[in-house]
Length: 575
Image 1 (cartoon, rainbow, N blue to C red):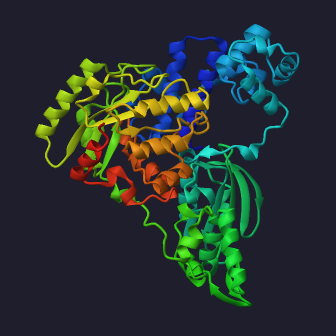
Image 2 (cartoon, rainbow, N blue to C red):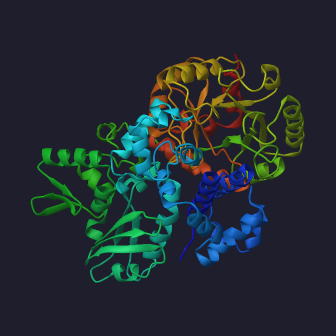
Image 3 (cartoon, rainbow, N blue to C red):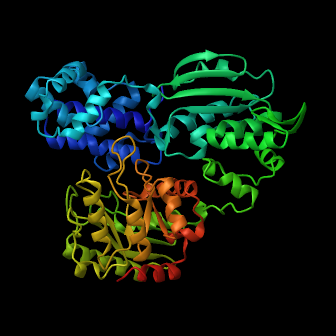
């Protein structure tokens, strides 16, 4: 059985949840949380490490947690987790699945009202008893009442794209290596690069007589095969992700690729176009009567409909078909266009690796500049930088630049936006920096008017370059905070300030809709890795994919510019 980073992170998060319900030591709980976050942010599978002792080199993972990782990888089980599951009643674990109920609130319900099951909670809400518990205001109670009145839908659960990839890519490789298989594509929302994936649609190109279904029954990550025929199969992977597999011949592979990539709305638009021309479009090809006009390639299908080929990321029925007809599709950004990274952390605060190592890794990633943006000293950041420490880091960066040839290290900081819109560092402390990244890291539950005013006030400060992860979301964990994005977009345009597309797998923030709005408004984007270790520059791939979904080209991206042009754009933000 294969164990992926997501599996280990989920086990550590569950341990942290159950320990929190028990009221265990906060430092112990935080250790599991941080380890889970580290594992989810890794761009490679930890199971592939040659030496298990290397686990201890990861941020927040010492000898004890490294041993647990080794145990899970070797046995598929974790004794500590099994013990906690026996100790914490199942009903309390069920409560964790309700919106707004983290382990702290579940413990409060248990200790103050003796609530141990969803049914207990339903009765307590009906009787008005929950209103007396701290942290359960009207909005929280309303969400809980709504959730308890509807049966949870397994189909509604979506995985962040990076987590789905941990299962999708091994499945793709397994099928591609089968005798007779010519090509395998994971289609649907996965191929379109959506930030979350509900299920996997797998398309296999193989001639008649090739039977991937038999081999699939022995696949290590298979949970269950629920249906299987000559050319179709359905099942569930071990992490609960459902999949549908289809086998098609090469004469239909292009049309099937287009059809099953979607989106549904994009497909409807193409079929309407085909009907208007007296044609029929399906997964088998584009036909006039019984004659196939296109089918082996996607490009041929689009061309036969009088369209340029449309990149999968754009296929959301947001005007891409009209643009393809009139040859006005954007020339989308590529990873090769990215010249630098303007949001990077070191071991000076919460990163794993030193300034020198992060710079060396950036050069190895074929970047030509990087901004070191360690955290300001504020909420929850261990060793966050005050003005004195920031000044010493600036000295170190200037000394490094004097030694390094053909690469530029920019002085920067990631500065907290305080609740009232002030910044956690003074203007004087920031004046020496090249890049000032500002971000909301606290008070996510402010009403929209206050949250918007907070961000707008921060954008008025004279030394602000980039608004980082502007919605504050964490996929599957935290909803975006309430914000009037149109007002923020207008302020960023007028100031100017640049908006970040953060490539951390659980952020991918901005989302594609807001990226497209920024592109249309002429607000430039900064595509960043938010790297906290040398192996996280790979997060730039996620930022690029997200930007492509928002119709962004090279000219829309701040760090697609060479260093001389970048410096001019950075200076333009100083008020």
